[in-house]
Length: 283
Ligand code: SF4
Image (cartoon, rainbow, N blue to C red):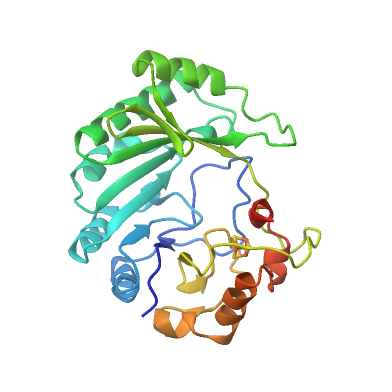
């Protein structure tokens, strides 16, 4: 039985925002029902303890999130949630109370990616949520994954304002580590570069490459399609369907094995992987 560090399970591919840094998806929108969630998670659980409730979409939009979290708790998962942060006040009690929830990451950079609303109110909500959820024993990560890298894309102008606000809320000195900054007990700030999503219409970057797709993770789309990573937003590398097959069978299928063995030799065999801005980081 192959073990994975994590599985990304897309409980919905719908989102309430339209962020400039997110490619979105052209797949039909939908929500996973609680029965479907149970079917898939029972198949995932033997392979991992860590369940991420997104691939595309905003997980806090799911109308039956409580039932999904109850099921995840019964199966003994540690659930990770990444959210744009706009629905936190509505979901706060549920997230604090659920024994399954282990970590919540708030993409604070999504505010500037949408150009609208009041930054102060948004930060109020994020900070008060962070304090409450940390008080409930969970981890909360505030993400600024909008650094410019080599190309200036002009989408991190508000970072300084956000940092000044965080410094008021969480007095410095902060404990700074390469993987992130500790603002307070169980509250973190995480930096990241913007990257180009994999895209079949992008220029071919060549077959040299390495990626942890299928090595430490897989993704499962809302229709049960298994893909190698959390970035295959259109399901361009369908490896099987978890409603009809089990995960071991899918991981041992010819396409999955070719991808895995290719990366073992630092080769990207899939056209999508040859056009993946994220994998370029590892070249
Ligand atoms: S190279 Fe990119 S598209 Fe391919 S598996 Fe890795 S993250 Fe996914």
